[in-house]
Image 1 (tube, rainbow, N blue to C red):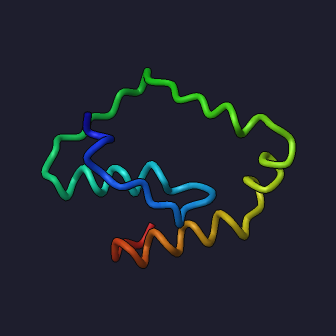
Image 2 (image 1 turned 30 degrees about the horizontal axis):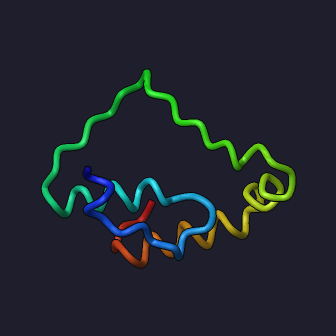
Length: 75
C-alpha cells in the first residue's frame, strides 16, 4: 500500500532508487524499520549487459549526484 502512495523517480538508473523511496516515506512521516535479516533479490542485475552497465562508476556517480541535489543531502 505504501508503494502505491509514492512516485517512483525514473531519473535513477543505477542505485539510490531505494533511498529515494525511503525519503518519500519519511516526508509522509511514516515510520521506517530496518530488518537485518531481510533479503532483496534483483534478478535483472544477473543478466549480461545490464550487469556491466550497473557496475560502471559513471552511472553510480550520476545517481549519487542526482539524489544529493534532489534531497539536499550529502551521502
